[in-house]
Length: 383
Image (tube, helix red, strand yellow):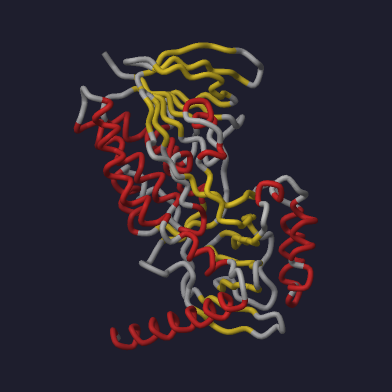
């Protein structure tokens, strides 16, 4: 008898899991809170782990690539001067630049017409059984149905409904970095810079970073530190950013970016939270992606971890086709070292993006200069 899996969330982790499970003979069903599929999104640098997972899932070749040629990054100071710094997208290995929507579009091609996808639908109750989980599904219209699944996968983001229903409240698993993020596409090039230029306007506790993309508007990433991120996330976004960055508006870069933000609904704004859990599964319910670990945008590995998680889950189920509990234990054993490795450095990486004091600001600038010189040296050595 074919085993059925309910996947909550039509994002990168959810669609990756659907592709991997379908290959193993499962029948996945995806439910999504939104009324339609999301597109667009912000810049992502897809590194080797993500590229390998995308290739294993069969979607890398159809994924749109947006890496600019001859990319340059600039550190823009408060006095208007600028200095060349290392490419912020290439700290470890050469990534490919994509939009979040490019990854989701490629994954969608892998499930379209093959997987039952239900929009405007959320779980309202999940009851674990010995061999199945009973899930009550509710639509936007208020209709409720109850269905049984051999496995329920919560891939519904950092504020996961599945996690709340089965594991507990957000506060039990959130570990705040003490920062806020707002990412969105700019509507126009940054005046005074070339199309393939990236830049950072940084000061203590606040930064604007612009990531260039080939053939698409650059992604703007505002980030700032705050003592109460959860309260800040409920404030008016534009007025908050205008107030925080008021005296950092070098050559109109900040104000122009905020004007672009005011004209779009394609933005991400939230507090930065890692999710830490002692176990990602309970009975027939498994968490995957940001629901389980949330590596944050600072890690540069969130999308990669989502695809890798789906791939590893499929491999674990293939290795233990008649033992779901054993497969879930194998999944955790393979994914936890990867997650721990990248969570370990998130606090440090947050200092590179949003320095908390003047020493961190100075150290960040020195580091980017050292990295730039070392890459120039390596380039000359390899010529």
